[in-house]
Amino acid sequence: MNVKRTFGTILTILGIIGLIYTGVEIIQRAGNAVNLTVIGVISLIFFLTGIGLVRNTKDEA
Image (cartoon, rainbow, N blue to C red; front, side, top):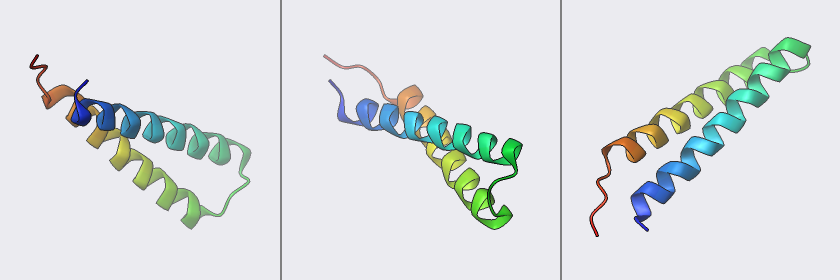
């Protein structure tokens, strides 16, 4: 299996988890706005980077 594709999948999953966490905390109004903003931005970066790695990596056997 391609290492870049695996790393991209891991980054995508971490990004999804972070975005879900941020969304839940915003809905519950439980967290500090600055902390939630930082977590949301980092999660979005992970998600977009992971999607980019998975999309741009070619399968070569």
